[in-house]
Image (cartoon, rainbow, N blue to C red; front, side, top):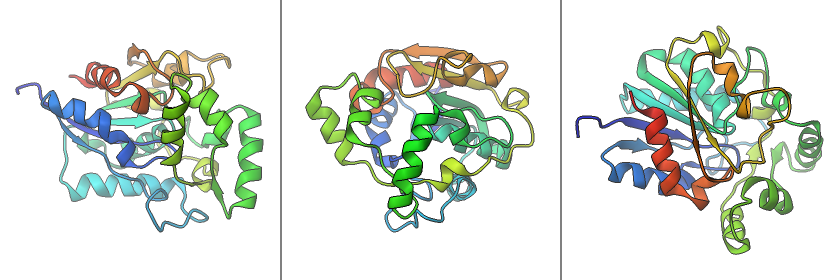
Length: 244
């Protein structure tokens, strides 16, 4: 189809590319080419104690290069927003648009922990200290804050596929040559309306979107984990956010 897009879905913390596949399948059925890589730090056997944000971002850039991808719509979910922001500095020539799906938008030198409520940071500090640098979400937080639009059975099934996440990626300051508002690559922000995982009460436009400067704003129904609960609606919203 003439308006076919190349889309790379970049997962968030505790995820791999596999959790993006239901949404990817809907997009592929619409005629788009969709890739779902797993970032360094979330692959089987990766060292959760030492893998940092720069390694995760470099692994994404290597994936784009290895597959000779260009005119990419780079879609980052949650923590994936940190990764695609860095990738925009490292490989701008490969990118047509950045799409943040309930994702973090950092300023230069910020880390993810700078952008979350203090009680999350305190929780993660304790978990990582007891788990050799890896963090996991306690199920009650996952259930109520991340996947609040699922019934208990789906919430449990989704939780069972999550994997320990390298905490260093939350602590490492990002290297950016300029604020994302100054980045010339076109940008979009997709906000799932029932998301209660990302902060919205700290003086920002929904989910940090105002930090993008000029951007397209798209909404859809769903929680932070609409990838599990509503992949069809999420795919349509990603298509609207990523076009042209």
